[in-house]
Amino acid sequence: MSENLVNTIYLGIGSNLGNRRKNIELAKFKLIQNDIRIHKSSNIYESLSWPNPNKPKFFNIILEISSNLSPLTLIDTCKKIEIDLGRKKKSKNAPRECDIDIIDYYNQKLKGKIILPHPRMHERNFVLLPLYELNKDWKHPILKQPIKKLILSLSNKDLRSIKQI
Image (tube, rainbow, N blue to C red; front, side):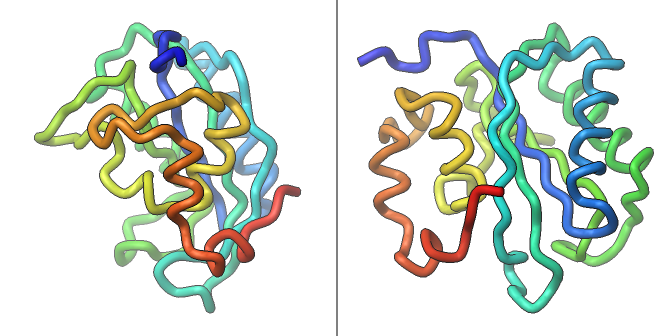
């Protein structure tokens, strides 16, 4: 089994306000404008808003990218794109036009201003399913668990509440 042999960064993009599909496409366009190379994009997945499922549903994708930007510069670039697309400072997990997270950055483990890999990614259907679509051999850099095992550890409710668009 190859253990994340590809030197890759995975970004998660989500939107649950406005034209969700257009917001994701605009985020991809703005990433490219910032010298970020997109190698693959998952299909769009629609999932319940977390932690409050009564908020508007999210569209989510995972991108496989490469970049020479450091993790901190990359996250700063992503935050700027979120603001460009209309994200306002609101309460944590409030609905938003665009949310961009670094899921995995070249398999690095970081703790500080940014935590890598994303600290809750292994619990989230809207990260694991599109990531599996892109790389069936991916393993969590800290847990050392293959992605299939992480998906199988999700609850049936989590697996039933997401659909590919």
